[in-house]
Amino acid sequence: METILSISFIGICAIVWGLIYCPILIYHLYKYYRNGTNIVYLLRYCNITVIQCILFILKLLYGIFSTASSLYIYDHNSPQDLIIRAVNAYLAAFFLYCFVWKFWLLRYNIMLNNIVIN
Image (cartoon, rainbow, N blue to C red; front, side, top):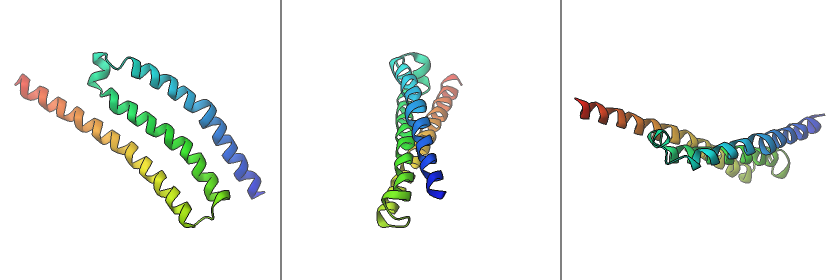
């Protein structure tokens, strides 16, 4: 019973994330990247958002692989599984770092505008 549930969970995640969610993200990422020279997008740091979206797509697809590998390919606490978990954690950390990077640049831009106006 446990095996059937885990296989169905991996299958559902692969279908929803890989076949529905990722193509929608890629479509909107392409539209966003294409309009990246617009001043509205430039002020919101389009390049960082594109990097962040690519990291999120990689994390979704890698999450399916890491779940399958921890259940079936490698043992649960094997060295290979720990490496896979570390890569998954680093993808999440880089994704969150992009938020910090973007908001720090926005804060810097607001402070610069305040100095120039005053």
